[in-house]
Image (cartoon, rainbow, N blue to C red; front, top):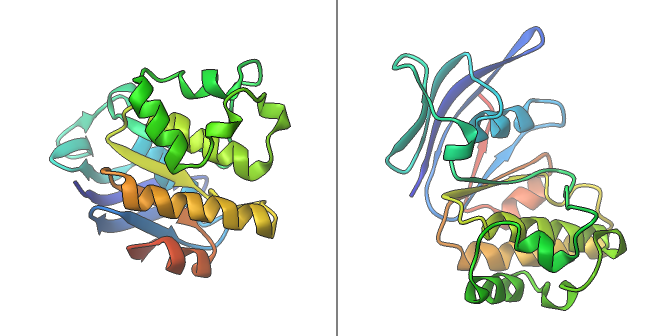
Length: 201
């Protein structure tokens, strides 16, 4: 499965243009902070309507301005992990992960891949930043997504937590059977995690 993105998004008084294609593994979109990377992810997820262009994931057209196609966000099957983990504070980690329908086997596989099995009985408020990010990625994976969107997954983490989260994403990259689009402003992070690196047009 692959991404094929050629879109223009209007934000304020400027246009953000993204043109890239990516296959299996991790495609990393690199651009400075404030350049519009999150807007591109929002457009792919269906949370923001582009002013022009197209978005294809695999054989499915999610958006095509000229053809009048705009698949609703709930039908795009995007696993979206935001910059802040957005875990449910009133649910333990296990309940956060099980928010998406899944089997016991899927839960065991994801918790092993992301090294979060030991966190299942914890409350979100007791997690470190890196732990919370890994749980958020796990919850997205367990919703059975067609593709995964990661918005600056290592930002605001101290060096130890950043390395912990990086290793989890590397394991995910090797284990996942779906394409992953990760955005970052950090070129070293992109070089380590990306199977291909792209920028904004």
